[in-house]
Amino acid sequence: MKKRTIKCFFFGLFAVLATGLLFTRCKKIGVETDSASQLSFSTDTVLFDTVFTRIGSTTKRFKIYNPHNKRINISNIQLAAGASSNFRINIDGVPGISYKNIEVLPQDSIFAFVEVTLDPNGANAPLVIEDSLLFETNGNAQNVKLVAWGQDAYFHLGEVLACSEVWNNDKPHVIFGYAAVDSACTLTINAGTQVHLHNRSSLLIYKGSLDVNGSFLDPVVFQGDRLEPEYDNVPGQWSKIQFFFPRNSKMDYAIIKNGNIGLQVDTLSEDGMGSNGLTLKNTIIENMAAAGIFSQGSTISGENLLVNNCGQFCAVLTIGGSYNFRHCTFANFWNGNRQDPLFAMTNWYEDVNGGIQIRPIVHTRFDNCIFYGSNDEEFALDLRDEASQDYIFNHCILKTEASLSDAARYHNVFKNQDPQFIDEEEQDYRLIRTAFARNKGDAAYNTSNMMDYYGSLRNDQEPDPGYFERKD
Image 1 (cartoon, one colour):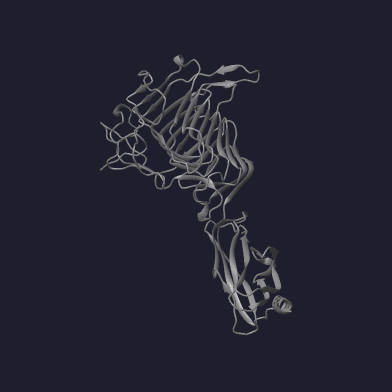
Image 2 (cartoon, rainbow, N blue to C red):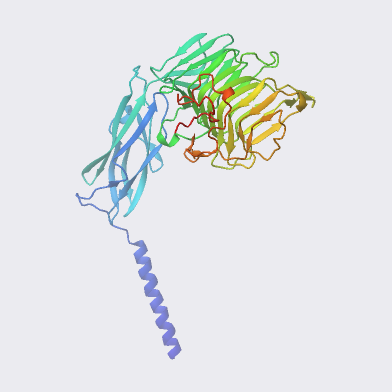
């Protein structure tokens, strides 16, 4: 009898608890109707800085909070400018212009997503576009400001350029798909010009000339077309600058960044090796997803170059060619899994029939250069008929496990000696004051104007290798 009473007691207690739980779960949380109750926002202003006209922005978001202990009903959300707004909104996954009766649970939040596309105004100066996202809750009016700084530009959409075209710095130039310099034509780009390439877009030079005339204070910059700060150092935003047998092309004080391949230089088979090719001076190539310089049997000379932070190679010189690099820094401390050495050179390829075709390396010198990075092996040569290849590394710093004992090829080369840069993480590849690399260059192969990248006079007796000359 006693056991039965206890059983009944527990059964009754369980029934009461279950009923209470069911009642609690079914009870609806009340709605906040106090006219003083307002929403909270994670920001009061959504700012886009800077967006090109015709190009949509990145998507920005903010949170709409209900800070109260009851549900709150947002009776109205809308863009102030309505359908004519440059801004586009999406509330909690639903695109639109206006929304009615959006409910937010107590102590909860929902997301608002915002994008913007600007209309060209034909002006050179930046424009400012403003709107607001309006909220009405319990009779309270609140708003979040929407602001976009825009910039008009010259747009090149799959365009073959005029034969003697000149790009100046009055407005940026934006390339969609490609812009091409045709045979025997020249594109001149003057100091301070900003060239922006859309995703997968390229600048192509086919048997023509590219003449880039930047300066230290006003370099010509090639980069992607996303100008938000979070894209400042993101590789892979555009494709490449590609030369097909360049004719007397030169680039001085260019900055090429955040693409897949900085410079691809190809020699067409019917032309053989070119006698003029591409001359690079005072140029920085950085943050490339694949390669900084990719050559296929071409002719390139470089002076005061910094090529750094590439997903594969800083420089890969294939199928022979002729190269002359002086006072260049090739540095690779890529933040990721990089399998390739920062520098490689080959002189052969396999044809369609499986045969090995050799194209020679001729008149090739690397003087007063630094090749250094985070991999154990940063230097690779894959050469056929090596004895007849014409190349020299002179007064260079090389990070490699390979033998450098051939005195005919390697003159005063320093193997596996840290040159001692200021800060690899910040991509500052100048030398520290007490750097090992200081005064290790060959005075006979100083730069043509005796200056470093920064315009400082080099030591005429013991110059520093690399693009930078330490003065103190």
